[in-house]
Amino acid sequence: MNICVAFQHIGYKRHPSIKNKLVIDENVADIVRKIFDMYANGHGTVEIANYLNSNKYLSPTGYRKTGMVQDESKTNYNWNEVTLCNMLKNEVYIGNTIQNKKTVVSYKVKKIRTVEKENQIRVNNTHEPIIDEEVFEKVNSILEKRGTNTKSKYDYLLRGLLYCYHCKRKLQIVLKNNSKRNSKSHPYITCTGHKTRGCPPLNINYEKFESKIIYIIKKVIQIYANKEVFYSVYEKYQNKTFDVRENFKRKIEQLDKTIYEINSNLDKMYMDKLKGVLLEEDYIRYSQKFVLDRKKLLKRKEELEQKLTQIGEKIATENKTKELNKLIENFLQLEQIEKMYLYRLINKIEIDKDKNIYIYFNFSKPKTHIEKLQF
Figure 1 (cartoon, rainbow, N blue to C red):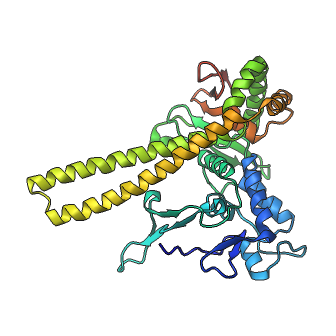
Figure 2: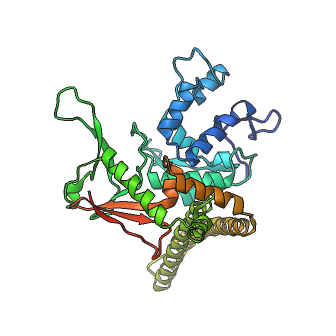
Figure 3: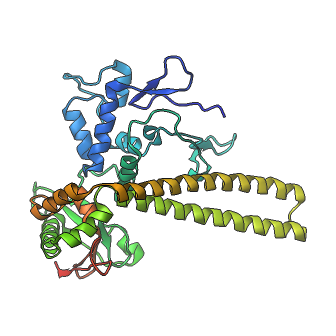
């Protein structure tokens, strides 16, 4: 297969002698690593963009046009959240090449549509990776949980964790003005589209709500502050492995579902052929496509299962004592809760029509620990 690799991704450049080959561009590779590291450690895309722009780093377009990494006098070529989200989701940074991402609807209609992931062409290890695969999977599991709403100006601590108790959908945090003229805007928690779904209206001051949640978390952690409990927390959630493993498992489940649907379709088509409903040549044509799709899915599933096994072996063999003590110390101090800790502690927070708060912790026994409080 002749793989054509794009070279416009920041962090890579063309190989000097091998056609369609990428090599790491060391001038900007550290910027790519910094972006992934910041996001994996709880910093949002808005915060990362502000960091890059305030430190005078040029955007990918600026770097391509000027050849400069930083420019003290720069007035344009700013980083934005869309660029960062696209980078964080791009498998090129773990050494893979993805093709057939988009296709034209027909030769008559010039509209372009995105091709489903299972039908895209993935070729692994086409070039040297900049980002470790565990970090990449951790970042994308956070992206999936938070969502990629790049219109948000503020990356709130609890964004991505808040849900409506009634419709089970994510709640939004929006800025609202006070009734007083020229007053400062404040963030409020709302259930957008509640009328359509039949949910009661919700309007909670986010800043006060966040303070109360942090207070609750500190109290709960004090209750569970013993080595035995924290060791079990560490086993599951400490070094990015839990989110990565869960992400792998979800992907494998999705692949199994798609493979099952393909097998069912093949069975139905065969019966239609026997009954004379489907012509022989049509059966052959459709079945060949289904079989090819299934082969790709099975290969992808095998790759994911191997990664899942490797992560399990890594956890079993690592010496964790030193890092465990550090994790316990960080949890107990909790002067300021960071997103990376919050996502390990909390699965989700639900709010009902009476403003009761239900906090689902990741580490309680039984599995879901619920705190119900009147806000």
